[in-house]
Every structure is written in C-alpha cells, then in structure tokens.
Image (tube, rainbow, N blue to C red; front, side, top):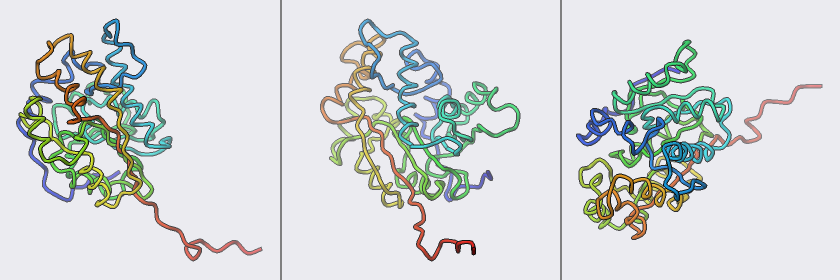
Amino acid sequence: MTEEPGPGPFPTMTAAVQETYGPADLGATPLFGGGFINFGHWEGIPLDPFPDAADRARSQQALYHRVLASLGPTRGLSAVEVGCGLGTGCALALEAYGVAQVTGVDIHPQQLDRARRAHAGLLAGGTERLRFVRGAAESMPFGDAAFDRLYSVEAAQHFRDLDAFAQEAARVLKPGGRAAVSSFFVPDADPARPAQLAGLLDTFATGLDVAHSVPELTGCLERAGLTDVRVTSIGAAVWPGWDRWLSATWEPGTWPRNFLRSYREGLLDYYTVTAARPAPVTTPGDRPPAPSA
C-alpha cells in the first residue's frame, strides 16, 4: 500500500491535544489502562462491588468489539483506524476479527511511538500486517480507495473539521467499503450546547473536546457521498459505568462527574455511527460475455 500526501495541509494540534496525549500520557493514568483510552462499554460488567482494573480494561475492549462488529465482514480485508492512540484496537482487529492488514493513523507522534513499542512483536517480520502512520483525520496520508474498512473509537470529539474527515473517509474507502465512528456527541443541533458543555466539563472548556453534534456528523458523511448512514445510541451502557469508575478519584460535584449529568440532561450522548461507500452499480451490459459452448 503506497503512502501519499493527503489532499490538504497537515492540521496543527491544539495545545490541549498536544499536552494530553504527549507529556501527560493520558493512557498511562489509572482512569484508563489496558492499552486503551476510552470510556468503556460496561454492559454485563457489575458496578457493585466496585469494578477492578481488569473490569476497566474489559469495558474498553468491549467498546472496540462493538465498533468492529458493526463493520460487517472483516476477514481477509484491509482496515484503517483513525485516531489509533496506543494501537491496541488495531491489534484486536487483527487477532479477533481476521483483518488481513491494519493501519493505525494518529496525529500525535508520541502516541505512535508508544504504539510501536507496545506492538513491536506484531510489527516485526516486515509483513506489514500492522503499521502505524502519522496523519490527521482531516488529511490522511493514503491514496484513494486504499481500505475496505475504516473505524474510529473515541477520537472524533477531537477532530476540528468533521466535513474534512468525512470527505477523507469517503476518499480512502474502497467502493463497497464500510465505516464506523464511535464517540460522544451532542444529540441535537441546539447552538447553545457548546457553551453549556464548556460550563460543565473542562475538556470542552479547554478545547480538548469539540461539541460536535450527531446531526452534524451524519450530514457530513452524507455530503461526502457515503450512504446507509445509521446512528445507534449506546450511552446507557457507557455513562453509568464511566461515572462509577470516576467516583474512585473524583468527588460528586467535581467536573468529571458532570459527564453523567450532561447525559441525563440531554446535552451529550455516546453513539456508534456507521456508513458505507456505495459499490459500483453493475448493469447487464457491464458483465463479461458468457463462454461459448
């Protein structure tokens, strides 16, 4: 697979993204662990008694399982994870879903260094079953129609330009390819939501997270030419478990505990959004002639 420059300039990381995934090394904090950085899908994981570190890792892996399963058949295909972080989701796609080749792309060079160290065994041998590449969601360094599947797990809240991401997703997917994006979004198009979330959650106030809405994302995907766009709320399996995990570190009334409040007040929810790049339509005239008797 040939790497090519993306169609636009490389976006600059915000200071919040640079710090959080660089020197602060969010994935190494007790809030996450297990090689993942997501809030988790807690369905089937008991919250009382208090979950342990293994439960926390299982919740994060479960979110990846939900997203990867939503892509449809994956065995023997190529895939790209946009915002791959520590790369554990890429390894899961290879090992549990039979994906033939996975490329993890991330904007942060320190995250890519960590991913390469963590998965040195899979990277060894020169088979290119797994590789990690620096790039931005809005300007991916790949040729057209490079992948059968594209997925992104809890990264889209950092994307500055959803329209550019959607255009790039449509460009790098092969005809007939499928995409899945899972993260937290505003449920509606109310223009008051960004300010409301910034007043409750420091990650929105600092610009680490962007208050994108689900209607915004689906509209971007459709304008990019993707079809069969489907939205599934999974917040009921995310927010209570995440808040329970946060309660070990943060007291009620502190800003991280406002994620659950924001969900209950209808300001924020967690979604999986899937879409497809249409396959070429074959007409009778396009079919090769039948062999003569």
